[in-house]
Length: 134
Image (spheres, helix red, strand yellow):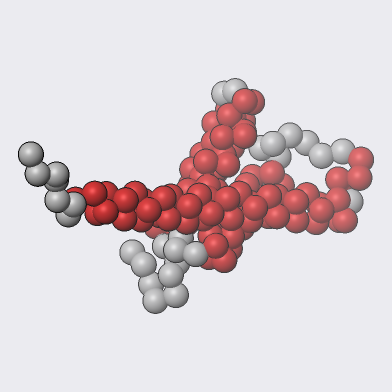
C-alpha cells in the first residue's frame, strides 16, 4: 500500500507494532528483549523508497517506545529524569535514535537495490557472448 509521496504505511504500522511488542515482551519476560525493538524501526525504514522517508518513518515508529517508556515499561525514572527537562530529554533521545535506526534501514535497502542492479547488469554482459569456434 504505497501512496504518491512514497511512504509505505504498512511498513510503518508493522514496524511500530514490532518495536512495541519487543518492549512489552522485555518488560513481561526477559530484559534482554529490549534492544530487539530496533528490528521494528529498521523494518519501518527499510520499507520506504528513499532515505528521507525512511528517517521520518523510523522517527514515527519510535513513538510507541516513547509512550511505553513514559508509562514505566522500561523502568522507573529518578533524579534528573523526573523533571520536565529530563522527560523531554528522554523523549528526544528515543526519537533521535529511532530516526537514525530508520535511516539505517532505508540506507540498507538502497544499498541492496544497487547491488541487485549491478548483479543483473553483470549477468546480462555474459549472456550474449559468442562462444569460441572449435
